[in-house]
Image 1 (cartoon, chains in turn orange, blue, brown):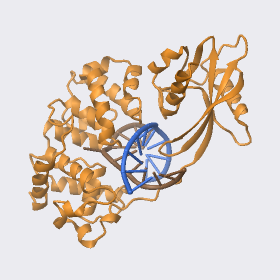
Image 2 (cartoon, rainbow, N blue to C red):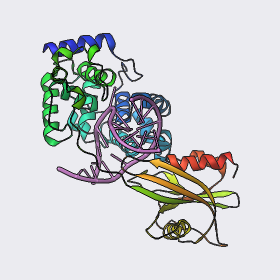
Image 3 (cartoon, rainbow, N blue to C red):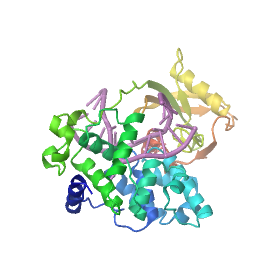
Amino acid sequence: MTSLVLDLLDWYAQHARSLPWRGIPDPYAVWVSEVMLQQTRVETVIPYYQRWMEHFPTVSDLAQASQQQVLAVWEGLGYYSRARNLHRAAQLVVGQHGGQLPSDPRALRDLPGIGRYTAGAIASLAFGLDEPALDGNIRRVLARLFNITEPARSPAGERRLWELARQLLPPGRAGDYNEALMDLGATLCTPRNPDCGRCPLNHHCQAYHLGVQDERPVVLAKPVVPHYTVTAAVIERRGSFLITQRPPDGLLGGLWEFPGGKLHPGEDLPACLQREICEELGVSVNVGDLFGIYRHAYTHFRVTLHAFCCHLSNGQQPQPVQVQDLRWVKLAELPGFPMGKIDRQIATHLLERGG
DNA sequence: TATTCGTGGGG
DNA sequence: TCCCCAAGAAT
């Protein structure tokens, strides 16, 4: 074991964070936490993790739940394919692995939602195998320690960093090693303003010696994000509201929303809404007062959504032409349908004003 | 290989 | 207000 790794493990023995999923000998708990932590902060995950384990304490409980129940518990965490994949994977574990999560990284990677990082994390943390796990923290720590000048997310950078993570790994202590690097990255070796003065590895750190820690890891230029104007219809009929279910995959897959869509060039807002409702539901709407304006930033685009109060013409029966499903629901039933953030805001405003 | 996928907090 | 980006995976 190199002195660098020795210093790292010594520091971890003193400064390891106490997290709800640590020290729990249940591979399922490790799995759930790792999937929730993908691209998501620890502080955000903690309450979701605890609620999830209350709703679905075992793989079997998760496998038996409906996708709607699963999405409802996941609502607000984002990247909903994680929830859909976790659900499917639980059913595969029950059906193909006798209810026990496999320990072999290759078998883990065959499960939906488990990639190279998560397989290594589960294998090392839950099963004690000597597997590296390169996440954003470890990528940053290693890029600084060894002054990696290739962009960290480039193929060449990825190769070097995975190689380093595997070379440094102390046999028999992969779990602590991986956790230690992640804790160091999360608490001291942070993306901005790293606290190099308190870092237990500063005398090993090439970037620190060169004074370039703020420029490591090298990041690729990011594309500009487009901005879309969209509309949504709050359609009321005899005390019920019309909501539609999004397609099973893709953005907010399987979640419910107030129907509508993207504004086309040269179109005004009511025309956009009438066109979208006709395309999706095969009916024409009468567009009334503005209900509200909502802004939201997704990862790779932004939207401004204009919601309007609408009614269907007499006798019109909407059909699920371009949506997975549709439902007329009472106000009190809205909280039970999983939704993304914007549509949840609309539903909440609807509840607050009592229809 | 490059895009697509949410949301919330901090600077 | 805006930009950054956080324990990545799938296609």
